[in-house]
Length: 328
Ligand SMILES: Nc1ncnc2c1ncn2[C@@H]1O[C@H](COP(=O)(O)OP(=O)(O)OP(=O)(O)O)[C@@H](O)[C@H]1O
Ligand SMILES: [Mg+2]
Image (cartoon, rainbow, N blue to C red; front, side, top):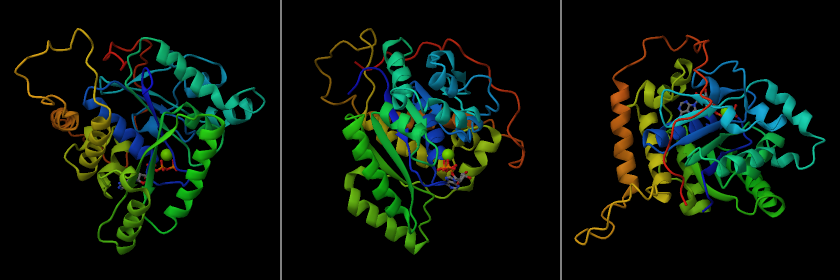
C-alpha cells in the first residue's frame, strides 16, 4: 500500500460503458462513508464535471497537466463534504498535443499526484475518470494509478476490448508503472432479462474470477437522469437500485481498504474486546453510507430531467477542509 491516497483509474477504451457513471457514483459512495475522496475528470467531454453541476470551470485538470499547477489549487467543492472534484473541459483536447514534445509526458499527472501525497490534503481515495481511448490522457491516468477499475457492459464485443485493455496494462506495468494492479471489473448496465448479458457476465467471471466485483450495476434510469440535475444518484434518488448498487460496489472497495484511525482517534485497547469486533468495514461503511444517503434523499430535486445542469459553478475551494489522516 502506498502513502497518501489510493489512486483508482476508471478506464475502458470502449465508449459509453459506464466509466463516468461509475466514477461519479463510486466517488460519492466513498465520500458518504466519510472517506475523503477526490474525483479527477480526465475526459475532455467533461461529463464527470457536469455530473456535479460544474460547467465551463475557469480552472481545470489541464492546468495541472500543462502548466504544472498543484492539484490542491484546482479543487471544487461538491454537496458532499468528503468529496472534491477537479473538473475538465475542452482545453484538455489541446493537452495531448501540447504535451507531445515534453520529456516524460506520460508522468505529468503522476507528478502532481506525488505532490498531493506529500502534502497534508488527507485524501484517502482519488478516482480518475478516463476518456474512451488509450491515448496520452488515459496513459497519464494509468501511470499515476495504483489500481485499475474497468467498467464493462455485458454485451457481445465486451471481452474482445477487454483483452486489448489487459494487454495495454501489462505493457504499462512493464514500462512505466509496475505498481498498477487490477482492482476489478465492474459489470454495468446489466439487464438480467437479457440472455446475452447473463452469458457474457458468466464468461467474464470465469475469466477474471474474484477480480470481478460481486455487485452488478443494473440498468436504471435514475443513474442516467441524475447528471442532468448536477447530482450523483445518491443525492438524486438514494433508494434507486442504481444508487444502491454503487453503494454496494463501494462497500466492496472499503472492505479491502478499511480506514486507519488517526493515532488520537484510536481507541485504547480494551481487554474484553472481541477480536475483529470493529473490523467489519464493509458493513459499517455500507450502513453509514445508506444512512447519510437517505438523509440527503429527503430533498428530492424538482427540476425535470431534460433541464440542463445549472450554469453557476460550485464555489471553488482553494483550501479543502481537514479530512481523515491518510493511511500510513
Ligand atoms: N446503469 C445504468 N443504467 C442506465 N443508464 C446508464 C447506466 N450507466 C450509464 N448509463 C448511461 O449510459 C450512458 C453512458 O454512460 P457513461 O457516460 O457513464 O459511459 P462512459 O463510459 O463514461 O462514456 P464515454 O466513453 O463517452 O466517456 C450515459 O447516458 C449514462 O447516463
Ligand atoms: Mg465518460
